[in-house]
Image 1: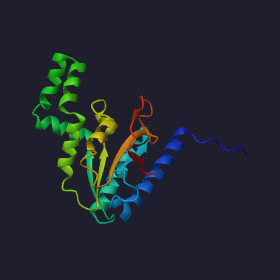
Image 2 (image 1 turned 90 degrees about the vertical axis):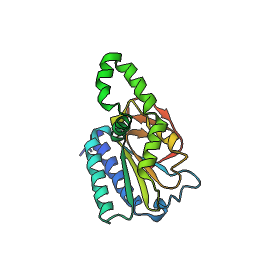
Image 3 (image 1 turned 30 degrees about the vertical axis):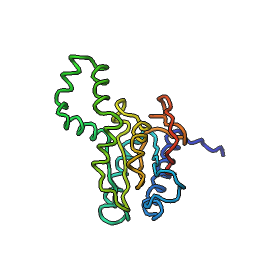
Image 4 (image 1 turned 45 degrees about the vertical axis):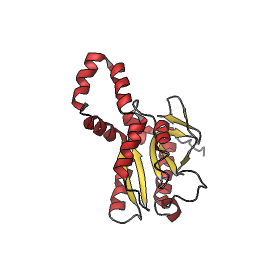
Amino acid sequence: MAIKPRTHGERAREDFEHRCEVFRERLSQPDFLANKGIGNEIGFYTFCYDPSLEFELRAYIEGLMRDAEHGALPCRLKLINLYDAFLAMCENKRILKAIPKQELKTGTQRQRDQLQKICSPAAFATYILEQTQPHEPGDVVLITGVGEVYPFLRAHDLLNNMLADFGDLPVVIAYPGSFNGQQFKLFNRLGADNYYRAFDIS
């Protein structure tokens, strides 16, 4: 009997389920929580998944948050959704309500350029630092919403700006695309962005 080849969707789901198991195991490992075991490198990790599994990823994260809050995991997950962060940053600058009118007035590209100056990678990194401090043993920063916040922010730019202030705890970024240890490829389609300091969670 001929073996039926697996479809792309089946392979993506199998890989996703494997990463879910590995990540959950990592969240129970003392060395991971203490940011040890990777030499002198900073503890930035990627949890890559196929973009078609976005809702499965959200459900999985919700389950992890519940388990961490109820003591089923020996860690404190500090969840940051980048799109929510973007909205909060705009609200803090008191420009959120004005954005639609400004876009109609100045055009989409100019509005995007202005917002990228206000909500820069450095500004995102500062916001995440403010939302996750104090950093204590057992904390894990979990970042989602990479696809939602595109094109205002790219993952490699964010992580570069987080280097100085997040060396004391693991940071995991859920990434809808691929990372080969050297390049990010958002949605498995957009041009690759170079980055060398992250480790794949699996």
